[in-house]
Length: 214
Ligand SMILES: Nc1ncnc2c1ncn2[C@@H]1O[C@H](COP(=O)(O)OP(=O)(O)OP(=O)(O)O)[C@@H](O)[C@H]1O
Ligand SMILES: Cc1cn([C@H]2C[C@H](O)[C@@H](COP(=O)(O)O)O2)c(=O)[nH]c1=O
Image (cartoon, rainbow, N blue to C red; front, side, top):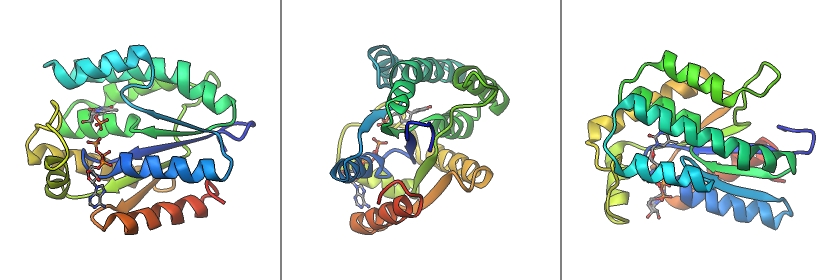
């Protein structure tokens, strides 16, 4: 548990089109059915300011350092205004992407310096007691880029990231794999190439094993 109030911080990660949002919505429903208070949110976004920064990130051309500064600025506001207060109320916070996405997209995808990303992470996520605010559990929906692209092609017009070539998403995927290898207890890889019902069964199994769901 994250807090003495029973708050829990869960994040959903993976390349665009992996299935994160679909399972986040389903898990929120399952948790509410068990009487848990749930805060659903996303990054970048989750506050009025962070949503404006999200629109810039997805629409305006910018370099990798600017991308990193924008996502961490949005994250700072999101943590202060939404995530920390919800955890303090005892909510389960379900967040569509968090800092693993920055290491995967800006670090892996763009090739940006991970040392600078770690510095920004420490500034933005400092918990005031010498530690870092990190998710209690991260579900990584892992799919090859070709599978994710086929799913998205049927769903909507691409934004600035979704329009990147497959090789970019190979690097992002490798970025997630490196994060998972470095934090094997926190980050659980799910085989998201499976049919939706099979992926959902894995989500349920992990959440039950970790005491997130009864
Ligand atoms: N296991 C699956 N098999 C087939 N289709 C799937 C599967 N999971 C999700 N989809 C479909 O793929 C599309 C993308 O799913 P979803 O929006 O959940 O992905 P996402 O990871 O949140 O994407 P993004 O990061 O771009 O928002 C949706 O149309 C969804 O119904
Ligand atoms: C948090 C975060 C996100 N991104 C990118 C990844 C996605 O392409 C978009 C968000 O779109 P989604 O439909 O909500 O998945 O933003 C990033 O590059 N860096 C980050 O830290």
